[in-house]
Length: 516
Image (spheres, rainbow, N blue to C red):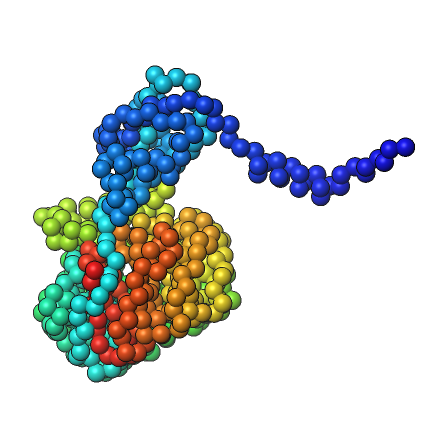
């Protein structure tokens, strides 16, 4: 008598069904397809009409083909492209969905007479070269450098804050000091340029905020008093939201509050109270919301006009150290783009319009037509959370992988990647779309304090306790350049908005300027 096999269990049935789903290939018929690349924004043709195999209609192959058609055969010259699903064959209409090979296969009529128009958009408009050398080491500060920030207009000026109670502005073209900003009586913990490049705000352990003329280095009025403890973080009101002639700046403090200052009257418009611990970071979003992170384990979302609390985002189990917005890059630079002063509009209305246009474009990443700012929070609980605060108070993703505290987090300027720096000596890359882990950048042998992307989102530089900076290729996850030179821990680093320079500072009291 033959052995009768028992019927499959429920678990076996589920496993078999899942395997069948995962392994089901896209049926790609043999055949050729005539395609025409078009500009997704203007509809203009990109290169000649070409005929390709249906099997080769993958985004990776199409990107290689388009670069070749446009004469970029050298690997270093190639641009990454994003392709969109065309709404109709033979037209330049663009859908809001990414290109999918299976969609084209389904519509394929089996005839080379049909012309398929594929809209494409370059992911970056210019290319930044990796910094490879220290072009200047500038002394002047008497204590550790705690904060660095480039001017939004160019790489010629860098501002730094130090434990010697001063901030300084440096001329990066000549490698010399320009101005010393004296007035604070405590360490300068935060430095922030206004988006129009005219003012610099500094926050200090003396509980005050000061404003300075960015051109002359002279103080603009008296100190802004109101906080009762250290000022830990600063954020300017986005340029397109400012009342003409009355920019505002927000300051976060160890006194559990955030204050919104009118830079003309030098008075606090409002105080945001509600946190039960040190407010470690503040971000001012382009939709009129202010985001604050605190040691009380929460992130709060405020209405910048009324000062009312909109949401409390509770998920972390320990101090929240840092916040980053998907639109940080364009909010910081206002109406300046990578061309600096060359692309600045003439009138105030045109400047405001350009700043708004740049923000809206950055906030609609993914081909959608809805303005959505994403927020990522980093914590001492070794995790990060990705949020869409305007949509929900629940996180989109819990991002785990760091083995120690996460100190710093940042979005790439194109809004597609997130980089995090931790005390576990690692920098990690994540997808900004869903918060999924991509790769770990290994090389530092000490805690990583800060990291920042190049303006074209292809490179990342990190600053560490191990006295080095490292430049990474985010496409491959490989080390691009090792940048030794500092004689002690490197606390702060920034990449200029035009991509020309990186500025860094730390325990050795020297500002270092790095170039390609």
